[in-house]
Image (tube, rainbow, N blue to C red; front, side, top):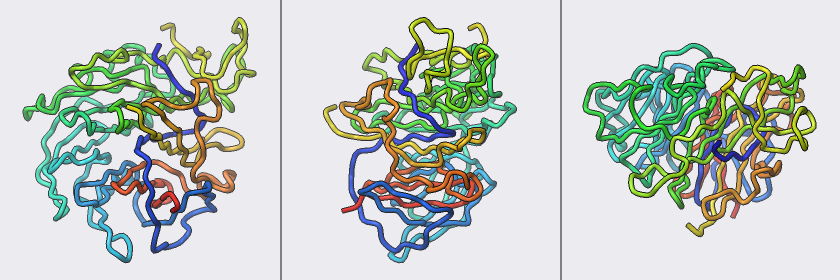
Length: 392
């Protein structure tokens, strides 16, 4: 079993960044709900009126590319002295990756494409079809893409489960609940089948929408969105279990050995404990971060950094949890907190009243960091993008 660090919330997105400070200017309004910021941070509403914005990336010209899952495709937003300037959608796919020079990678629920991209003009060429074969039912239709800065010839793809408990995903060959990668020069013009090609970075990952690279080491991390309505030994434990997971996958380069390559992370058979008192039937008692089964489980460098995680928010917990941006401090490429910590995720920006969620609050999804260390955070349910910076 590969290592995990548990956190508690709903849908989450991870982005690992170097520490930097920047100033926030030209506030345009408070945005939806009543937000609270940790000491040392400032925030403003940057733009609204988007259609379910999720994944974001910043191009070489400093423009923000936003994938609108509500049907808007990928939109380019440029910045002037007086604020953001919204551009027209450039392409139809709903997820985007950091542009690689003059190339943009994008995905739909079923396919992955590559575009020639002009950052100055904000235009794309005709799509090149790279990966196909990801048709599935259920709600997990996001296909996260990452091109590692330390390995720019690799394309990483994350695909979630078909069901809440997808028993078939216990077989790696399904190509679900998995993170894989390809050499970009493998793509010759004929789309590759997702399940049968590429290299498995990790599997047994229910729905790892958040995937990020540690810029100090090149290590790849993901945030796991774990099972809903968990029961164990006939007891409903879903209000406090399981915990979400911050999972480490090692490096994707072809020279250094990676002991985590191809590891299984437990789903659909095991889930991380968050509240041990509710987990019974374990000799010596359950501990935070321990992997346990549920009733439905099948039988089967020296530099400071941080992981910023956007918690999309719970839909079936009382009181609601999530709806916040948090950070997990890193040292030497690993979290500072121990694996059984319940305090590893420190809140940066959150809603003052989660009982108003999801309709009356911001609901974080995508994250992007620019060269100045400014954090862009999308809220899909409200169609907003926020700018969050460290105070001077």
